[in-house]
Image 1 (cartoon, helix red, strand yellow):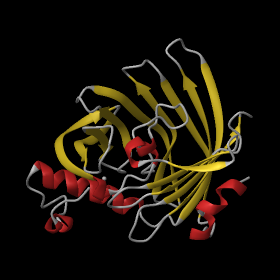
Image 2 (cartoon, rainbow, N blue to C red):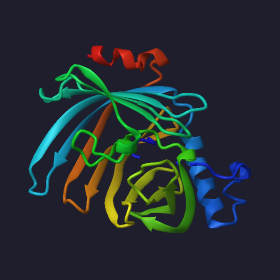
Image 3 (cartoon, one colour):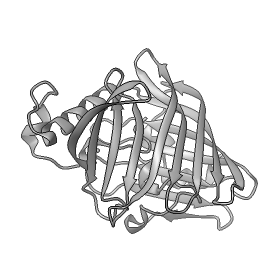
Image 4 (tube, helix red, strand yellow):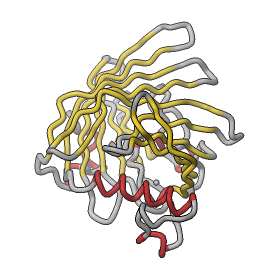
Length: 261
């Protein structure tokens, strides 16, 4: 899934294939485009997840969340995440409208306040509901959101991988760059290292336990984000994926956030 976790480049590069790419920048872009192409066409899906937050002392808290996502032609995905447990966050909902270029739109419904709060573009680097995932991590990672540079090929946990950097082109990102490990065979993102605005290593995302859906799409069951600067971590476990449910844009309506169940 292109949730945790792509920018405006010169138009001619969009037709560059991996086999003809010559510079590290061309090759990095070609890899990202191929990854994106393999993820297109799923239409929509629903799933549930458990998010476990752990602090520096090892104390844990968990949250149960329902998610639904809609693929949008010629733009980024739309998604809706609804918190079901524990009671203090039940009914909280986040609506994402990802865009290929420009600022993503995000709204958070807080039931205790009975109001919908728009997430400011200046706050995209902020923590999502106390987790180690930022708001910018949980939108679809469109190719156009980054510039790219292939670094090397290497083996990671037994899989031959492309290793490339991507540099956010959108304003107010909390990152200067991300280093991505993408396996050669299935184009699964296995690991991403995030560097903060001072270019210091901030956190690492590890994705594992991949399953193939619809004979084509590889999605991880486990996503583990470790913050190296705070000692905190967040583990997300996905289950109950269901694809092509007939979801439509009207199912992702800002005005209906207060009525989500």
